Amino acid sequence: MPRRNRRNPEYFHAPEPVDPSRTTPDAPAWASAAGFEVRTVGGQKPYRCPGCDHEVRASLVHLVVVPVGDADARRHWHTECWRKELRRLGLYHPPHSAM
Ligand SMILES: [Zn+2]
Image (tube, helix red, strand yellow):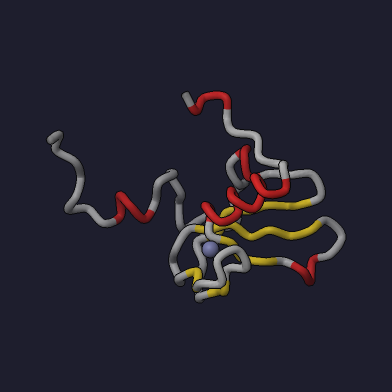
């Protein structure tokens, strides 16, 4: 088996390079959808993910989704749960570099 960075937990927590000192960087291109404003956040406290109804742990990098024109309806999603939601809505466009 190839040797991997198993002993470095941060390797798993941050699949994409995110500088925690910066606030609300843009979400990955695939996460954007018409009618929603999507941001990546680090999370200072836990939230409830509407996709799986489980907790989004504090410090976990995840997405904030705000329906355009309805800031009160903002929700915190696990990145993968939002991806599934977009698939469900038929709005998911995978990045061209995926393969
Ligand atoms: Zn979730």
